[in-house]
Length: 384
Image 1: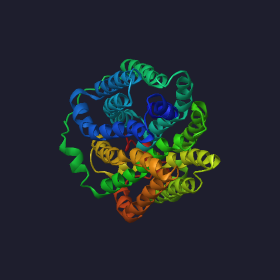
Image 2: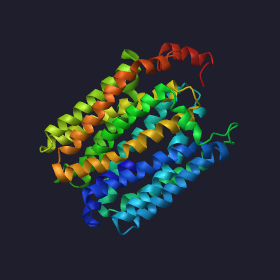
Image 3: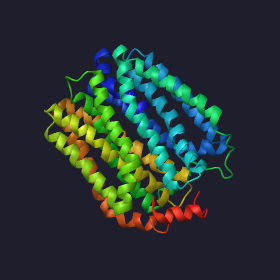
Image 4: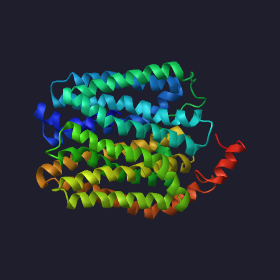
């Protein structure tokens, strides 16, 4: 919920702290850049102190830095505390995915669907909560994140069984070695392009709707989040069963690129921007689920290492997106961020097309996610 809670108040932060849109975009950039680099150490930490303690540490850092951001008096301070927030998020997100996969009694695909469903629920509900809190004060959503993460910390401490340190301790070099595998490197490159479009949409969307208030933006991104959640859980497996992982990813990325480019063409019309934002949720839900499954299934390394390597490239590469998008908006107009995001995602489509065979070969041999073969393997105990 951390991303969605803040999105409705971006314009309010700019107004109250006398910041430009590109300065406000650094809330995303500092967050993602630190989170991406920190992904390299998530495995080092979790294999030494255990997954549960790593999750608790990540949540504690988010609680502290989100609260400090809410107490800040300048946009620079908020940007700095968002960077600390990114560190906590890295420790939590990477470890949470691998923990859910390890703890699941079902298949890898089922565990990832559970993970994406949780993300979708948070992304869908957060803009409304952020809008309600933001109408009281721009500081409200930051304090809201602290409260929610406190609930998460208590729940993790009470309900998650103790997890001992791993038998093999990973090193800082392991994620870089993992990127030597072509399929993982291709997926990471595609994710950079996708993230440039994704976070350009998040950062530029509110500023492209100058007459929309905090709650209006909250409702718009609520619709976006609902479609994202539904597509993650229901649409992604349906499309994957019918056309396969690589064709489904190519199609979803191409539709997302087209959506951004259509928003660029109609950026002066609020209806076009609103519909474009909401519809994008469906494409993003499919992409999120299928990319995560491809990364977890294609890399011949431990899943936490694969996740760390992929996330490092994805977030550090995509970190420049929000700043570049809103800097373009300041100098070239409201359409420029959507042109930038659409072109970036289109490049990702070309990378996916060029590397699709390599990814398909890497995925070959494992039962297709959500297929009858996967269910049979699960029943025989071949999957964990």
